[in-house]
Length: 159
Image (tube, rainbow, N blue to C red; front, side):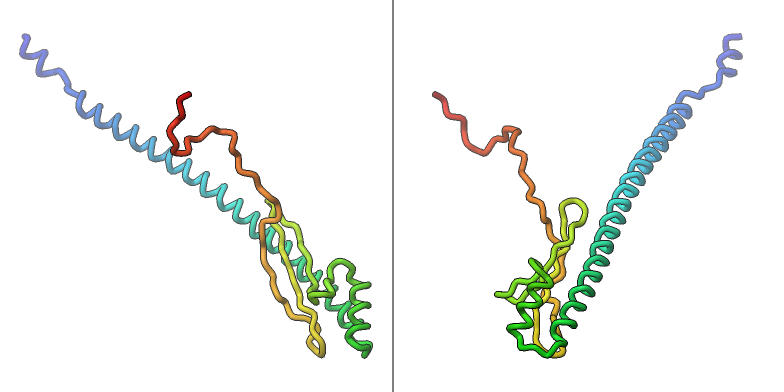
């Protein structure tokens, strides 16, 4: 009778352990995939916001360029000498025009402390200006956090 009861016993220990291990591995990999996908989504949204901000600033820059071109067309089309024209352009453009360098420039603020810088070189003749630079730069100063004491490689002095 003892033989009969031992034969009817089902041995499911090893296969259950393997199945539990496989389920735990699949759940762990699933959670890691979900976490990675959320990180990728956040990065994609930040990238989309940055690109959108750049093109909004670029659009404002194109509008500014159109306005400046209109002023230059009006002032240079009057047939005046370049010195008189330069004075009138300075009066119309104000601080945007630097008479000494002949540069017309502006900064268009963007997000995260960045700005779009546009510089035009004032020219004579049919070509009124030339774009010298059109770039994005960090316009805000940032401070490095030095509040955490970090070992600089020097041995402590004993006093």
